[in-house]
Image (cartoon, rainbow, N blue to C red; front, side, top):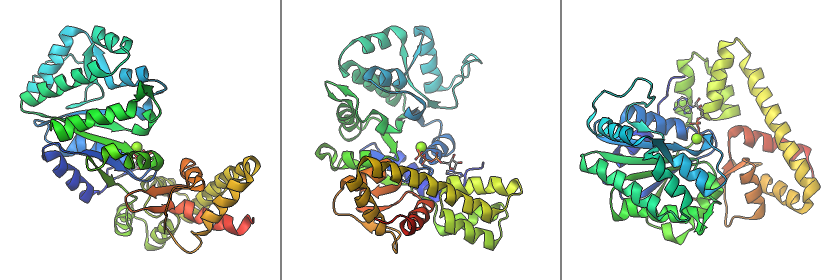
Length: 357
Ligand SMILES: Nc1ncnc2c1ncn2[C@@H]1O[C@H](COP(=O)(O)OP(=O)(O)OP(=O)(O)O)[C@@H](O)[C@H]1O
Ligand SMILES: [Mg+2]
């Protein structure tokens, strides 16, 4: 489906990337709000290819259970002569790469490294050499007058990995060095795990060294404009907005349903029934496991009877449970708690009428 809008966010990100690297950027937002789609659109379509070299690492696609897994994802191995060729290609744009090399424009999905060096990284029990190598690569790029950008999507997947201490803290120290100290490379981290972001947010080390940027669902006007493009009528638009708000993935689904000739209202109602069923299953098994927590979750839900979002004072166990289960979303900067989607809000409200404590 064609990429839609996000003008404000695109302008913001393109501008940030035009500055000297200074801060680590955290791009966060509720599930399926379009963070990955936005960042991919920016790097593929909005950046001057003669100016930037982008490393986009998506941890979602990989199984990451230990430090070595992360290192293997971070790097792409090549034979030594090919690395030289790769460098020439990216740095001066000679178009003589073999046809079978599938590299899209100036976006790399791993840092190029010769096989023997990667093996050294994997056998050493610290990350020092890895970071040194990365700095050398980024400096090389910078010397050639280009700006490196490192993007890590689904960063929370390495939240619990350890090497000496937590890998994530070593990595953040390194990112601070790359941005605030050396101004060498832009670092963007994406995540929809608001508890992970909250943990990072409260980490003293990162205060004033990183900036949070919320990518939320579409607002009403954008949702309307999106649906108009696919010839939804006003009545359908209002129904979709009522059930899904501006959740891009649900809007895309609605378009598909329309193209299939399905009834939009029935599609919306069914989506709610399905979501309600899922939430009830989660709640009933929680009730069996931990009745006290179950009751506190229901009490927390009661806040949403008449409100779409609430302010929270502190992250309680019931907040942790609902966030972990992807029912609620925490906006850490503003201290706001809200359902992950409009569908979740409606499901919560209906469930409150059916489950009593
Ligand atoms: N600007 C957009 N224009 C058109 N479709 C979009 C747009 N943004 C998101 N979508 C649709 O919504 C889907 C979900 O978006 P995406 O995967 O980018 O969300 P996300 O915030 O990265 O999700 P997650 O929280 O799971 O990481 C996409 O597959 C795409 O179909
Ligand atoms: Mg994503």
